[in-house]
Every structure is written in structure tokens, then in C-alpha cells.
Length: 628
Image (cartoon, rainbow, N blue to C red; front, side, top):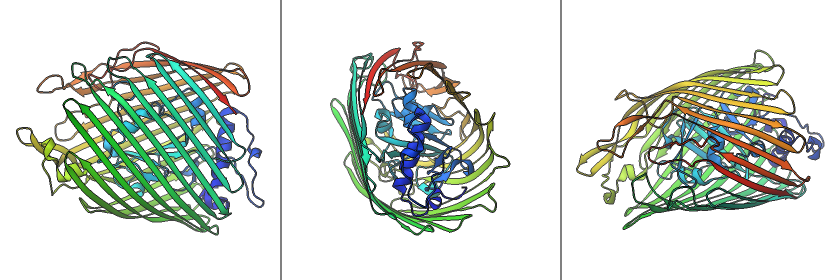
């Protein structure tokens, strides 16, 4: 059970495995849909798992034996708590600090374990979605949870498996897989600030074909003048298994947002048009139970336009990706993963037109000398045409001394390649080229334990982490309104992550995440801005009756610092703590019809994640969902 789950199911296709896992996930979330609803091929075993992870090794593994600090987020579970957007879901995880620039439709940034916002990597449907040239902030700020099968948050330096930008960690997102009889849903929502939205989804399949589709639209005025937001999102996945050991598939996701940006208080407003398109095509072959080979081709385009009269700023980034991964299980106690990656990008902004390529090779090995002990290690080499090469490595160990207990530790290195504007400059912005610019570097380690108490009624996880960052990118002025990006920064982040999850009975469940973070600029001794020293997120959910759910959640950010750009010179100042609360309830009128209501910022807290960009006051939303 401790080896790769793909090895466990022998030739059983990954689509079948994923569908079975999804069935069990829904069963846990809804206490329905028995595992027997998914047919298991003759000669194979369906194992009921507490959880599996893919991100920690790029192949499914049992969470009980994984050395990495990783969280799994299931939309089926989040839906019960009426968490509807991606940035709220991520902010509930330990070690994850999400900073929102104002209200709905604004940019959202992740400071994972205190790493800078461009040092967290999003991997969507198996391909890297962002780098320093193509940011994720608009995507995250406008993303709901529809059309997502599962998400994982992998903390700590992960460049060995994923390359550039994975210095703080990796967030993986998978588009919904379809299987079984056709099912779907239609929902509509309305609420404060003239918010109106709707969504529809469908999924299903046969023994050899699976499909899913999702589309949504939301419009809101928000609270400030000239701050309305419109966003449309859609996703689809199709998979075909012509033989038991062969899989062919493809995904496509799109997001089209149009937002009025009022800017910081006292500034003039502009408009933002942000579009994200990502498509993949992949094939996977099982050469018996020992070898699995997968080839993925990806295409990603980010189209961003900011208009603030009389100027227009436009960024267009197009990337083509080819990723080849092979999994070899020479024995039941060993697994080796190796592959190669190629990315070609074309970047256009401010009169700059340039291309870049990166070629990479990687390997990772997992060894179990005994079932209770897991050892991992790996290395990677990346070669950028624009910025040179980087070599990274990572190792980890976990030990299960008794059932329900796990001790774990990892050590790894990471790097972040500069953006093409950092490297080549943009004269229209007063940014000069820097031919000697090198990639950022990091090294980090963590140690922790996970413990089940009273059977599985209470699960506790504690992790201490420490990261060092060198050659960080910083702006250096070379004249009046002119400068360049240089490798002059150094920083240290360290802290503790605590996670508690309990389900004493079928009626009450609770969760609590706490992060203590000490993030310091090693050159100045100042704290890194927008990283609270204390972050708490908790929730209590009560199944009052078989049809009625009520719950409440709280989020706290304390001991914060931010730069006050409203004055010159801009000082770094203490920012007021804040506590927000949410209340939610839902009622199942019939088997297929559910009514929902929630109150966000129920305490009507006045606060801002980013100084000058106030968050929304108290807001009330109601929705109806019909499933078929």
C-alpha cells in the first residue's frame, strides 16, 4: 500500500483510478454514493484510502507515507462550506497567505511560507501556468471552483520536480474527470452589490470515454465607485481509453475578465481586461505494471490590458510546453520517476518583442526499505536561453512508528528565472536591460509530524520550516525615472504551521489552520511586507438534519506591515489587525434541489489586505442549485 498507487492497480487505467477516487471523495463528503457505484475490473482491487497526493512526486502516492507537507482540497468538501472562490479556499490552508488587492475581480497574490508572490507556481492539468513574465494574480483573483476535480498545496522548495518559480511551493489544479452515468448541475446566485451569477456543469462517460464541461458567469458592482467586475469561465476535459493500458485525453480552460480598477484610495480609476487560456493534450501508456510513460503538450496564453487614460499597457505572453514523464517500479519497494521538459515562450509588451526557451531534465526516486520508512531524493537541470542554467535537488524522509502517526522531514533547493522584461528591459517603462541577471536561488527545510487521535476523530499536523533566499530581484535606480532589476536581495523566512481537523460524529466537523511566520529582509533587517506574523483560519460545520447544514468560519491576520505609497518617501508601517467571519446555511428541498445562503464579512470589519485597497464590507448572498 505504500508504493505508487498506479503500481497497485497494475494495468488499470488512470482514468478508472481517478474516477474511483472521485467516487470515494464524494461518498465521504455527502455520505452517499457507495464505492460499489464504480465497477472494478476483474482481477483488480479497489482500496479505500484516506487520501492520496499527486503533487509530491508527480504520481499518485498514499498521503500516509509522503515526506512532504501537502494539503488536498476537494471541491465537494468546500461546497458544503459554501467556499466559492479559489483564493478563499487557498487562504484556509496552513502556510498559505493570500493577499487580495481590493474587492472581487482584483488581483490576488500568494505568499507561500513567506516566499514572494512570484515564487509560487501554479500547475494546471499537469503544465506550469505561470512564471515571472506571466503572472497568475488576475487568474487567482477571478477564479471560482467550478470545473475543478481536486487541488493540492505542496509547501517548500519544489523546483526539482517543477522548475522555475516553485521556490515557496506549488499549487496544482486538475480539471474534472467524467465517468459513469451523466450527471450535472445548474445554479444561480444573487446578492449584495448587485451581484448576479450562474453556472452549469455536466460530466459522465462510458467504459472507455469520459467527459466533463463547465461554464459560469458573474457580474458585480462591488462597493466602491467605478469597480464593477465581469468574468466568464469555462473548462472541459475529454479522455479516451482505447485499451486498458492506454489513455488519450485533452483539457481546455478559459477565463475572460473585465474589471474597472479604482486604484488605491485617492487615485484615478482604470480598466483591466484579463484573459487566460490553457489547453493540454496528453497520452499515457502502461507497459505492464512496472513502467508508465506520459507525454503532455500544453499551450498557455495570458492577455492583459490595463487602460488608464491617456495610456494603455498591454502584455501578451504565449507559451508552448512539452512534458515527458516516465514512472518505473522495478520492485514493490522502489519507484523512479524521470522526464524532460521543453517550454518556448513569446512575450510582447511596451514595444518589447522577444522569445525564450527552457530545456530541463529531472529525476526522483522513492524507496521503502521497510513499509514504515519512506526515503525520497531527486535532482533537476534547467537551461534558459535568456538567463543561463540552474541545478536543484531535493530529499525527504518519513517514518510511521505506529498506525495514525507520521514523522517527516525534507530539504530542497529552488530557483526563479527572471522575467524577460527584467532581462531585456522596456525602454517605454524606463527599465534598462541587465545582461548579467541571474536566477534567484533558495534552499529550505522542514520537519513535522502528523497524528490521529481518538481513532480518526481528530487529526493534528505540526510543521516547522526554514527558508533562505539569495540573489533576489530588486529594482536599482540608475538615473531619474530609470533603473534596472539586479540580483541584490537576500531574505529568510521561518515559522510554524499547525493544522487541526476533527469529526467527532456525523453531525459536527471542525478545522483550524494557524501559521506563525517570521519573514525578514536580510539586507535591511526589516520584515517583508504583506506577510502577517500570525494567520488563523477556522470553521465549524453542523449537520443539523439530513437536509440542513449550518456553519461559521473565521479568518484572522495579525501583526502586519505594509509600505505606505500614499506619501513620499514611502515608509513601511504597521497595519491594523483584522478578523473576518462568515456564516452559511443550506437546505435540501428535494434530492436534487438545494437552497443556500451565506454572509461574508459578517462582523462588517473595515480592513485592507493591501494598504489603500479596501475589502468589501458585510455582504449577503443567496443561491439555488439543481442537480440532475
